Every structure is written in C-alpha cells, then in structure tokens.
Length: 203
Image (tube, rainbow, N blue to C red; front, top):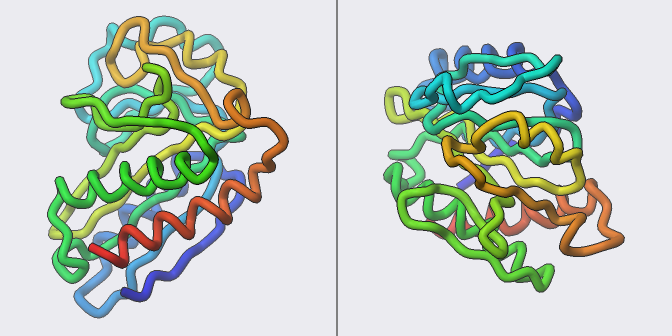
C-alpha cells in the first residue's frame, strides 16, 4: 500500500486538527493514504470519552476538546506524533486490527531498542514497567481514519501531573530518553516510521 509521509515539524494543535477533518471529509476512494509526522506545542486534549474530573490542574497549558477516541492526554515538544489518515477498507483493516497494528509497531520498535513493553487489556496504548510510553486515539469517519498515536521520546513529563492520564488516576508515564540514553528525536522518528509502515503494509 502506498502511503505519503508528511513531516510537519513542531505545530499547534487546532490548525492540524482542522486540516485532518478537512482531508477526511473531502477524500474519496482514490485519495492516497497519508501519515502526518509531527510534534505539538504544549496542550491538553480531551477525547470524546473525557470526563472533566480528569483535568486536575491545567495551569497555563491550553485545553482543547478533540473528536478522537479516548480520554484526556498531554502533547508537547519531544513527543512523536503520527496521524494515520488511511482508507481502512482499502487497507483491509478493521478498527481493532488497526489499533493492534499501531500498538505492535511501537512494541516492535521498542524491542529493537532493547526496551521490553506490553499492551494492557481495556487500556489501549503501550506500557514499560507499568508506565505508559505510547497512547492511541483514533476517529473513523466514513471508513477513513484520522488522529493516531503519540510516543514519548524526550519531553518534559511534568504536565502529565496535571491530569489523570487517559482517565486513570496515578497512571505514570515514561519516555525513551529515560530508558535509553544518547538517542536523538530525529533518529527515533526515522527508525519508528520503518516499523510503522511495515505493520501497516503487512496487514
């Protein structure tokens, strides 16, 4: 399956969210699938299932209501985000299979880095030593996916203290930089995309 990969750099959340919606609403069965690779400026985003009590203390960080699945999370510089803009029928992917494939890409990549990770039942995402390192949140509209996954690489984790991450009190987070030294963000991006494209194309 051919996929266009776009590297958007460090961007604010709302304009990209609107572009994802526009792209999804105007695409058709001939539109190429795309991956948008980026980092976001600091922001808390609320998924469709979010409950207000999970936002503990926003401080001066903006809060944005999104239309992705899942609960509240934090995005900031040093976190790798890949938005998955795919025709899931054409890709022969159901929603569960897509989620499983995205999780598997993270597991495979972390294994390559000699980091052991795992899934949790009923709590999408990837965990290392019971700490969350990657989150997933998707939206499917007319058979097209948007939103995607975030992988903590080398960021300030302090803002996660202001929320019940993904709706779980006391859920801790971790990142690649705390588990493996001397790896650059650009290197992680380049390496992870290989694993991500591999699992998507093998579906």
